[in-house]
Amino acid sequence: MIDTTSLQRLQRVARPRSPSALSNALVFGWRAVLKFKHVPEQLFDLVMTPIMFTLLFTFVFGGALAGSPGEYLQFFLPGILVQTVVFNAVYSGMGLSTDLGKGLFDRFRSLPIWSLSPFAGLMVGDILRHLIAASIILIIGLILGYRPEAGSLGVLAAFAMLIAIGFGMGWVFIVLGLLIRTPTTVMTLGFTFLFPLVFASNIMVDPGTMPDWLRAFVEVNPVSLMTTALRGLMGGGATLSQVVFALIAPVALTAILAPTTLWLYLRR
Image (cartoon, rainbow, N blue to C red; front, side, top):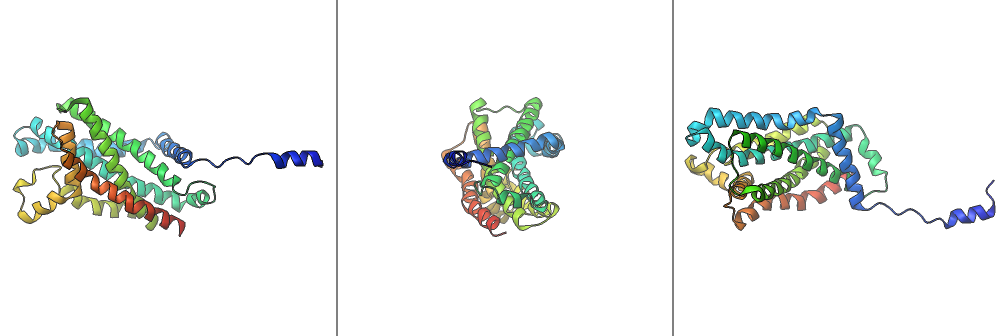
């Protein structure tokens, strides 16, 4: 039996403080990082498609589109970086849908943690994926002859913008993951949404030769605005307006969909 003195001592013990929101997010971020260790084939999926796009368009279509593969690579590589980040954002929704199907988020809901921390952790994993994929694509481009005229600072600024783009786009697919039960359906709907945005953009070709109605869409397409800004950052000719226009979509998506994510999560 516990005597009165021991009981009083136990009652005087301070209750442990709840972990901070940042601490929660970092723990879930580490969980996302560990997935690379246990499922390393994810990296293969992330980088093989953009590598194939880079090689195919540079050497098969580059001469016809820009006069030489080297000139086309200078135009195309910033665009393929944007495409890679946008496409990779789909994996956020697929991973979330998988975890929800396993009942994992029911356990998270019972823990004394910040409600958005599981999703913040997903974003940390996404940022790591984006950085790894973009770095590999850039290295391939440098080997093929791409030269960022803005130097290292331009590349760092471009990568910072890629992180912002990936962060904003990730919320779209987190919402899809909360609404749709199967990862394959999330992927199908995600790419159905992304394909028109990516291919009706200025990633692969200059829109100057497009029909007027299509060019009007391409010029205001958020993916085109992102690509234009990234080309400017890496090429040394970026303007403040280009950067601001490129960030409108990621900021708006985050402002609208982050609260929507929390609302959908709490009402499940």
